[in-house]
Image (cartoon, rainbow over all chains, first blue to last red; front, side, top):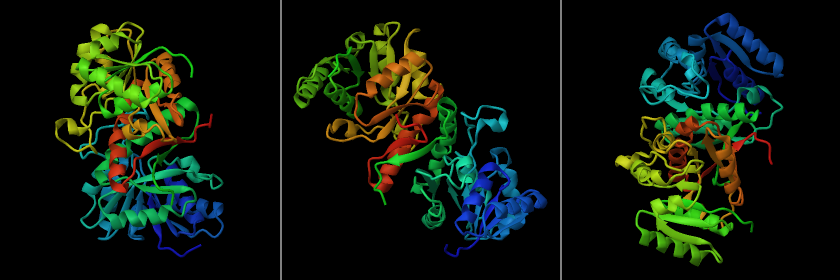
Length: 226
Length: 226
């Protein structure tokens, strides 16, 4: 276990956020578990502590959680993304990396999870970039990584996590973080605008899950094995 | 080598179409090589014959080529898709399967290959479905399979070919055909509307190719290995 600066997860009471909190805590990363409600955040942090021996996890309301780290994961439903960002933007210091895992699924407006909404900025991640203060770099990622696989610490990953972003240093920081999850290979999928495509992959994997009764992920072939 | 009914490739003088013609001929499938120009079609068929010993390949102008098979692959640039379909639709009999590999890359209007155009019907494949006669089933596929890998008969595939379509029998026919290409695993990715997402994967793999200097493909993880 290496020492590490803390990572905040805004929306850590959701399935994906909580699974990620578990995995990071398991990897020895101090996690700050954010929720709209400080009490629910504390409760989630307790659950992380109960599941992972020696976990360094604390729960805070989203704005306080966002202020506690310079790597903040935003893991909320698309319908809440803008409001959540507005609630935390005052706490995001210049130099902060925001890992946005939001997917504009049509479920946000009562539609199907195999469909996505058009987002004026192009993607949820580009909407996030528009809403954060200057100096905060948005990286989009984790769209194809199943919450249930994150939450199951016994699950051995054998898939990729596609990352998009305009700031190479920010992508490198997220890459380094995700490499702590065994078997998950971060793959640089280009600039932030590629999130328009990569976010769609959630809907694709959901469609494949429904049709094949599996929990699918994505692997890019043809890359050098590192 | 098993016997097989012929497969027509409309647009077989393009890179992907030609690579597919080579692979299918190599697998013992009789191929009808279509082009706008009958002479260029004949020339392409000759090139297939020169590259694959014992190939059963003949070249015809697109409409005659389309009439020659009940499995027709449409492999033309997006800018030509509608016009090409209008030129062959009179030859497509009820029961024909159209495998559409068209991708609405922004290059069609001078844009980047890492971007796609919005298509009024949702995707190029859905545009194709609108343009073919009733009784012709469109299957979308092969968007992430590189032309250069198809054309290189020595290349061992280790990736998936995602297929979308509303007609299960049509998807089964395409699945059976693509299984003849060693290492390429056809994966049912759902209904035709999923082509909106799957077609985007061409732009994604192009972005990854440019960034990593590779020839990428896609593999779905979590499916039973069959």
